[in-house]
Each structure stands twice: as C-alpha cells, then as structure tokens.
Image (spheres, rainbow, N blue to C red):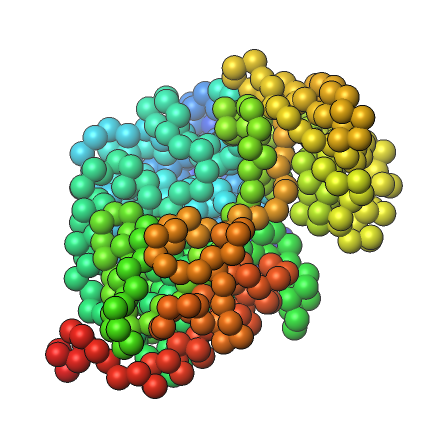
Length: 529
C-alpha cells in the first residue's frame, strides 16, 4: 500500500512517538479489507511502539481504530482507507495517539479538554476532497484529547450505501450524535465555537486587548499574504485578520500558471504562504470575519475594524484583501438543495456522483475544467453556458468536445433547480433564442459562473465601490480614504488571478509603507508614545 517514499517519511515521523499505539481493525472478505490489512501491517512494521490486530467488531468494514495503549478511551476510527489527501491525517492521528504534541494553539486544546458533554461525531470525506482534511484532523484531535468525544471518519466511496441512506451529497459532511451538524470545511476553532457558547466572547476579549497595529491586513489570500510580507520586512508591526487563511486557494486544486512553479495545489501554496507569514513575525488572526470598517477621522489616526464575534482591532493603516467567492445562480431551488445535489466544488463532491447524470453551469475556464474532471467520474455531464458560445480557453474546449459523455448547451438559462424535497432531481432550462423551456433529469448541479467580491461589509464605510461592489483603487492600491489600501479579487483590478493578486498585494503593502513614513502618528498612538 505504501510506496518507498511514503514508507520512509512515515518511519521518520513515527520516531516521534512517546507512547504505544494500537491499531485495531474490523475486516471482512472484501478487497478494501485486504488493502486495510496490508496498510496496517506495513505501518506496524515501521516502529516497535505500534501494534496491529484484526479482531475488531465494528459494524463498518473495513474500518480501524487508532488508540493510545495506555488509555483505551482515547481513540479515533477510520472507516475506509485514509489515503490521498487524507494520508497526512492518518500520520497525525498516529502521532497524536502516540503522545506527540499537536501544533495547535494551547487555548484551543484547553477548550477541547474542557468539553463535558458526550459527543459522538461521524464525518464523511472523499479522497479527492482538499477541504476534508481540516475537519478530519480537528475531529481526530478532539477525540484523542478528550475521552468523552468519539470520532468516526468515513471514506464515502467505500460506503456508498450509507452515503445514499443518509443523503450525503457534499463533503465534508459532519454528524453529531446521529444528527446533521455541519456541511463544509470547518477548522478546530469553528467547531468549538459551535459547541461552546462562550467561545466567541473569549476570543473577542483576547482580540480587542491587542495593541494597535501599524498595518492591519483584512484577508489572508495571496494578496493579503503578499502585503503582509512586504510591510513586515519594512519593520512595521503587521497583523493579518482572515476569516479563512488562504481564501480561495483552499478550494483550488491544480495551479499550473504561477511563474517559476510548474505545478502546485492551492492548499499547499496556502501552507507555504502561512509559513512565510509566520516566519516574518506577522500576527496572524484566523477565523476572524470583519463586519464593519470605521475609517480614522484624521491622517495618521487609527482605523477600526469590527468583527463578527464583537472584537475591535485598530491600526494606523489598512490593506483590505477580502477576495471573492463563487457566484450563486440565484434561481428557485438553488438554496433549498445546496449540499443536496447543488454543489460548487467538483473536486470535493464529484466522487459522490459516481455514475450519475449531472450538469455544470458555466462555460468559462472553471466550468469547462470542472466538466472535464467530472466526466471521468459521473455517468453524463451537461455543460450549460448562458452566452452563445463557450468562453474557456480553446485547448480546454477541444478537450471537452472530445468526451463522449458530455453534452454542451449554449444560450441556456437555468431558471429552476428541482428536487423531491430531499435531493436534486433535475433543472429547468430556457433557450434564450427561442424562449422554449425544457426540463433535464439529473442528480447533481455544479455551479461555476464566476465570482462576487466579499465587500458587502463595506457598504457603510464611505469606501468607494464600483457598481459590481469592487473596491476602487489607484495605481498604488490606495482607496479614497487616506491610509486605507486594497488589493486582489475584491478590487477593480481585471483578471482575477493568483499571480496578479500577489503583485497587487505587494503594491498595496508598499503603498501603506509610503503612507506611514509620510504621516506622523496621531490620536491615541501619539499620546501613548
């Protein structure tokens, strides 16, 4: 199961074990069970502190439990094989069960240990889902740190019948004590906030106590990270507050157009940016959603940013880099059937539609790439483009048209997503030339129709926005408010690309630097000095 490279890496990691770890498998006569036996046998052979047994009695087969030998109440269970994107999750589970300390904020660990309710989590993932590992790892850590918490992590492809019965049409899908808990990516802090009603207040108090920054960046995508690196290297006290560090990078699989990098993947690039941010002593504040901007009343004064949890941060200068999100269709049935057949991430949710009929809405690069990828998995793809022709690159169009199980519809306006109350069963399509409507029977709809800037929270700020909600900036990244700069997909800059966002972020950072050296501190900063 493990190639030579994976074996060498895992052996090196297992050298960090401090306690004995037991692997207990529940198997049957299936091929997946044979693969599970092979995997666990190989792992146990790599370190004397790891043992494997195959006498488990769990109803899901194949599955295996990872537990601390000295405390059998601390365990996590994988149902199916945690390979692909989840191999790292498997490695971390082994290390944490073996007493290796997690690299997680100590306050979060204490919150986990302080939970007093009995919590039984079940979480469905797919091996191609790059959003799933964060949830898998968070639940794994919780189960191994608190004996009152149980976590079973289920590879949906190995348990298709259960996936169907429980109506799982999007991953990550998390259940708590048998009931739906959350669909989508969640980090440890977000899970704790849903479980601990006082978590937001504690986080807000801690944030609000921070001293004013010289540069505060709102948004942790490529633009925000680049701005932070530039201002920190200039010697200014810099903070980055992000709702989700990495932004859309976390939802991007293959990246092949970043100069100097032939190929990388979004989560990996996000991790590299995070490491660089931390190496530059930037104060990274994750899981922080900005809700209000209060510009300073005078040059050199303090701008204020309010956050959803009630916290307020202050800074002499700001760089707003909140990026953009996938645009919704805005038709009847879309919201009702979101995560019930309506999806936005083909890489994450595609495997759940194996052999089924689906539609992809959008004929740009994102839509056509999604259709090409999905055609390898699903039974049939109908690609629907609102315009009279596809807008994707010619090389992608040629590839799409070569696929036998793909139909292409142009001049197509989706007017409704239909379903049976539990899941999608079709859509209604209008021909924009003839006005004729028809229904297409299908089981999934993947929406890929462009981006919307994350700027609604700026509506009352006095910041100048375009008619599309984009922040208007000049050639230095400056907005109409002194000391406030903006960069990336949230601005009017054309061509929403990673490399462009990075460049715009660097430019905005340099603009903030220039502003700071030309304006003396005012207000409470000057008084404090």
